[in-house]
Length: 110
Length: 114
Image (tube, rainbow over all chains, first blue to last red; front, side):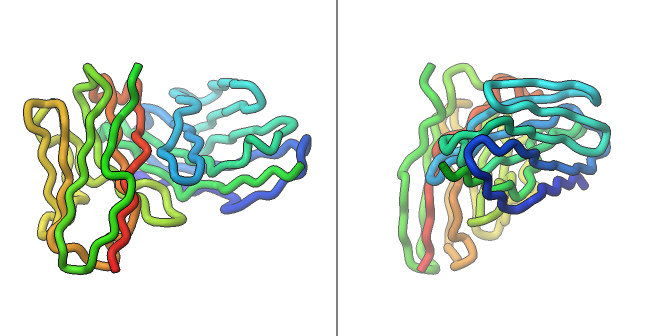
């Protein structure tokens, strides 16, 4: 059974204070690892898909990396508008649906 | 490009009542998913359709939940009878093909069962 564990559950940063969110996963065969951002009252918004160990992707202040057991979402010099819940999900080769972690609630204070 | 449309946005019902949610996926997306997101948790898949056929409904509580996707476009998810533990956000997502390319979520329907 596919499993995804995210840490920390919640993170409070000062504006400009860089940090990383962790996503550990167990999957029989990885087709892709997804990062989503979710704002209150909204559905998850796609950020990145990573397919193989060593792959990295960047978007503005966010950078996602992937190893064989975990993924990191690095946030560089965050701003208050980066405050949201960040969800990690895996898609296995045997199953097309996504298995999600519980998310990391990020709060960036000015 | 229009996104995934869902309605209603909010619904409050009493336990043992029935409720239905509607989803219109992105045009051309053959694969449609219903997820349940309980407060503080990540979304959990309930059912996956490929066109109008069911691909995965292993986590759907079939004694009370049902879903259909007529003509391979719109979909409805029904709960009958509802229980208190069904209080959650019900998210619809669609993708271009079964590999998940273009995976996009709607804003969801927040259900409160009292």
